[in-house]
Amino acid sequence: MSMSRPLIGVTLDSEPGAPDGGAYSRFPWYALRRNYMDAIADAGGIPVALSHRQDLAAETLERLDGLVVTGGAFDVDPALYGAATRHDSVTLKSGRTRAELALLRLAIARDLPVLGICGGQQLLAVCLGGTLIQHIPDALPGALAHEQPNPRDQPGHEVAIVPGTLLARVTGAERMAVNSAHHQAVRTPGRAVVCATAPDGVVEAIEYPGHPFCLGVQWHPEFAISMGDGRIFSALIDASGSR
Image (tube, rainbow, N blue to C red; front, side, top):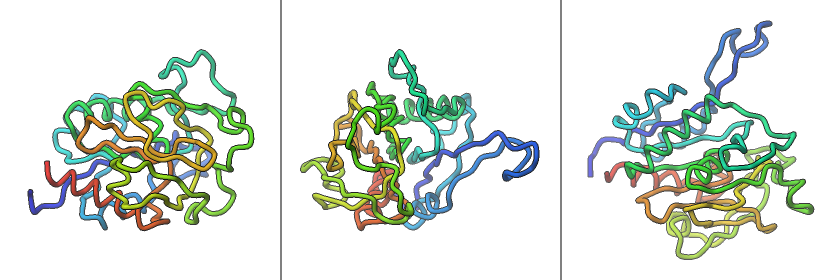
């Protein structure tokens, strides 16, 4: 195992800019919350931001030891998982999705450690042949408030972790309190398997059994709500450093 810190690529959100200058810039810009980067650095990795240049995906991954696909206030295009219709609530960032899909597909093919967070978990499921629930309140009447009303740095609900899974081994837990900031969820996991669920049955985590480390969580472990959150990042760094 190398003594150097593994290099972890982190995907970014993007916005087109605002002509009136009310946003960060009048011109297109990337963005990411600091706690994503801090969680990786605190676990022993070196986080590096990745552009949305799909044409650079292969060369980028040659230099990385691990990949984190982050969340954001947008959705995966339903056409990517064969849906014939698109719910009115669905919003797209097609350039970002294309770039992240390219990175994910290559990372999985190359056995590069992968962590998908929130929307990144949903895209991971789609990448592995799965499908999504487009809007939880309509598809699952009576479901929990998965877009929790309290602040995101507080727990929204618990998840039950499937025994014997990678997530169970990593966290050392059967249950975890997590935050919740999503209106979509994994419907079918494709080649992945479900490794955690919410009390209402909504899928909260998936993993790809044939891969050295490929995990997706629906919550945001970078907020460190539970002890298991930090362990998820530590496990990613351990897997990335042992390649």
